Length: 178
Image 1 (cartoon, one colour):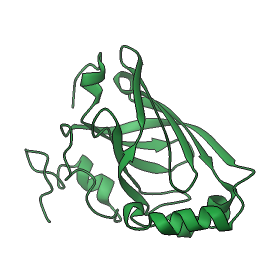
Image 2 (image 1 turned 90 degrees about the vertical axis):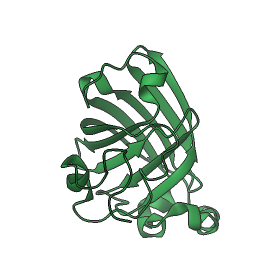
Image 3 (image 1 turned 45 degrees about the vertical axis):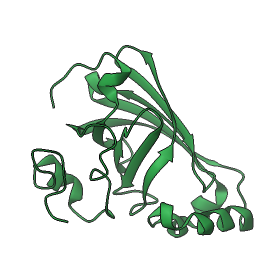
Image 4 (image 1 turned 30 degrees about the vertical axis):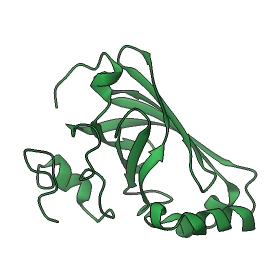
């Protein structure tokens, strides 16, 4: 995808894969002006995936976007995308319980929100583990807004490579194998 990002409309509907400097690989989709979907491919909570996460999505200046949200786990996320430079900065604020029991979150969150809420009440939330990292964007795709095929299944080994190599989506940005 070769385009210059200038407006919020340019950003919405874009699908990203990025790797943080600490090696964690994430996949993230600006589904519309108020929700995001994502999959986590490596790192502390690898295997986790979420759809329709409510988020605050803003353009700070042309081509620079800030997205923030709080998950049912109690995790807070702040991402600053600079897609024209293929960079982003993310800060994840993990509650103590997620740091100590990350396996509880490694699921399709939408079907287990009650489990996340119960863990948030049962275990300690403070002190938070703060993970601020820069990342390199390794893939950008024009998925269009509200495309439910973008993040529609659990992550698997090699999925980011399949996506980057054009083996996952067809020409209309729909999953090839369902």
